[in-house]
Image (cartoon, rainbow, N blue to C red; front, side):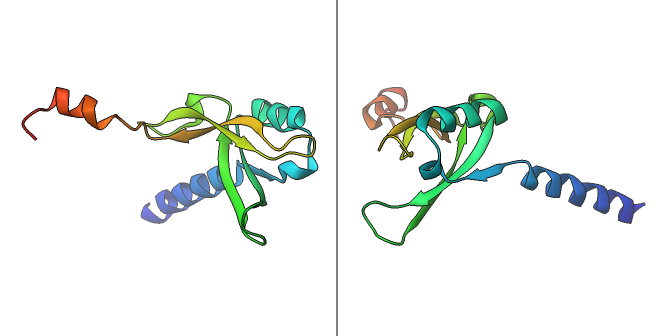
Length: 109
């Protein structure tokens, strides 16, 4: 019974890991990048850094917050594409609160 449960869990993890497709945005127009994200919900975009030659950059880009983990929000980001240097897309991030705001909420800390 434990072996079946373990196999089922591993299968689900493998399926989830395979679910996110990887793309090179430099080979796609900005509209195509945005349409791909919109169609799949979440993708990984991998491209070369313009500031550090040879440094690959990548992240997971999402259509909306349903593809973010609990406690994360959708935040604007930009990636290069074949037709523009800054194609607007979204990533998931943990919200950062202003320190002054926290002091007002928790003055005794």
